[in-house]
View 1: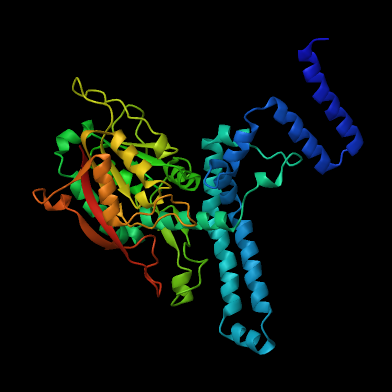
View 2: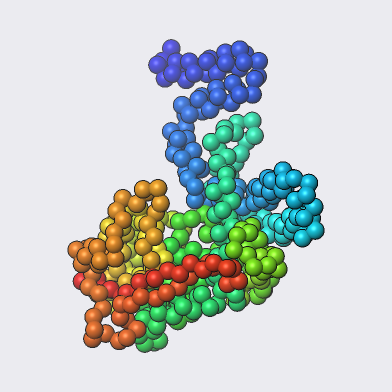
Length: 420
C-alpha cells in the first residue's frame, strides 16, 4: 500500500472512530470535524483569521443583521436597572415618563433595524462569494466564528451617524467646514484638465468627500478598509436598496442618553440621502470604490487618453481624519509618497488622535509629523502659494449631535504638500 494512500486512510479511520466513540455528541463531533478538515484545508487558519478581523465583511455583516437583537438586549438591561430602584423612585420615574422613554427606544430600534437589515441584505448580495465561503453551519460553528459584541454594536451605530454626517441635510454644516478647504485646494486645477487627473481618497468612510471631488470633474477612487463603512456605502450605491432622495429614516442619537436636553432631541429622526451617489462604469471618469487596505494599493496606470509618457500614480491624494488611524504613521507617509506621481499633491485635514491601547507604534506630535514628511520626501506649500493652499488650523467637529449639551471641537490641521 502506498504512503499516499496510508496518509489519507489514517486520518479517515481516526474520524470514523471519533464519530463512533462520541455517540454523535455535538461538541466532540464539531471538534473532530474541524481538526479533520484542517488537514486538507491549508487556508482554514487564514479564513478563520479573516472572519475574526473586527472590520471584515463577515463580521460587519453579522453585526448589521444582529443590530436589533443586540440593541434589545441592551434595552433589557436598562429596564432591569430601572426595576432595581425603590418603589418611590419607580413612581417618580413613571410620572416623569421614564418608562415611556424606554418604550420609545424599543420602537426606534425597530425603525433603525430597517436600515441595518437593508445593509445586511445588500451585503449578502454584493459579497455573496465572501459570505458563502464563511457561511455559518450551525453544527460546525465554533464560538470564535461569532465575534459579535458590544464593540460591533457601537460600530454599527457609528455608521448610522455617518449617514447623517455624510448624506443628510443635517450634516451639511459639518461637511462645509471640513470639505471646503480640500475642495478649494483641488479647484486650483482648471476644469478642463480635471478629467485627466486621478485622485485617491483613502479612509473614505461613506464616500461623501470622494463623491464631491468627483463632482469637480476628477477621476476619484475612494478606498476604505472597514466592512461596516463599505457595507453602508454599498447600501446607498445600490439601485435596488436606495432609489430616491430622503428615502431612508434613521434615529442616530437614540442610543446615547448623556448630554441630552430633551427626549424630543434625543429621539429625532433624520432622513437620507440628500443626493443619490452612483459609481462610474469601469473605464469612465467619475467615482470608483476600492475596498481593502490602503497600504496594499499599487500605482494606477494613466487614464485613457493621457499624454504619452505620463507616469503611473495619482495626481492627488486626499486624507480627511485619516493619518492618525495609522498603526505606523511612517508607513502611511511612505505609501502616500509612493502612490503619487512626481510633483503630485497630498491634501490633508485632520487631528492627531492616535490609535488607542498602544496600537500605534509611533505617536508623533504635529512638528514631528512635518519632520517625518520632510524625511520621506514632501515639501509643504509655502508663502508664495495661493491662500487656499496654505497650512492652517481649522476648528471642526466629527459626527456631532448639533442638539446635544456637549461639543467636542478638534483643532484639525490642514496642509497641502508636494512629492519632491
